[in-house]
Length: 418
Image (cartoon, rainbow, N blue to C red; front, top):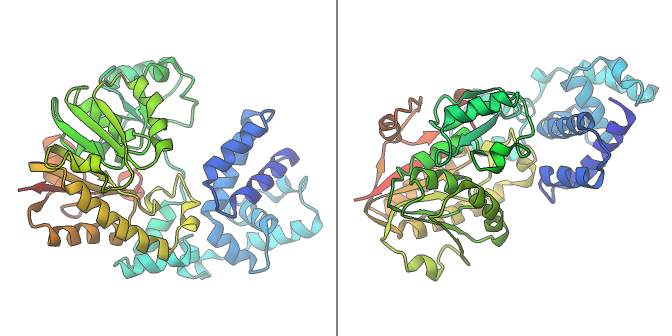
């Protein structure tokens, strides 16, 4: 750790810690404003910022109520990373070094549950209320402290998975097939992929394996009419389009013009010609009403707390609250009900989130089914088995987790209009 890296980390943290903007956006902006930083400096800065955010509940407990950002940095390097304290003597004075020695002796097993799980108290309270026991809270929290792997999806419209893997290997980039998705590759390390000709030509997209499985659950085929109801930047849209082999009609709905504009360059690379991006004002937009009862499948990747992505976005647990989740629950129910009107008889409705809270997942689905007897729950294990995907699941719905499946914490329920 050198003075340049330390000062940069401090600057970034002061920007991130008000939690008014996503941490990755703050970090990207900082690197853009400081182009002279080398690759090694950037890696050290990014890893430290995200590591500190992951462990912030622990650091606040270890340092006490009056501590500030520098105290947390000292505690992070001493108590969490367990660095050799000699590494820090170039940065900290004698007083801070005494602090570091004290932090190194911290006993995490004596801390409250939320501290041991490195989760905010509101998150732990929500998990316990939703049926998690203490062991499950700890297991989930600790799994979210790891950094996420880098997964790719081969764009089968242009190139199958094995040739993509071979081409990457020729560029010195190691990867292995993902255990569940038939299109996925898990890359070793964090190489720069956007510079590769393979990427620019649309042979692959960066996409978590769990997200790929959500697309698979739509059962999309050639010539169908499909809707991605909350398309965002279109990762799942592109995967569904490849399943359809660029035939039929694939509607990508979203209320954000910015998110849909981010889809455009990805769509151009993909080679898909069947995607119809549609900006809508709300889930009740007239564009949606005109397509009622026409869709073979509708994917609803609903707005959610994002807690299942904490390995990638650790700041989310501070940017959400118990109240914001309640507000999301109302939005999730409304969006699911509206999207269901698009599904034709015999068609498929897939409800998904990147959360592990039942209040955002199974409870939303159960309430929907109670009010919509024309829909029936389909066992996702049977659907996945037909696609030769062997996935250990506890019930009819799909709940993925980093500790069991190595993916982000995705949930999905599949319903059919009977």
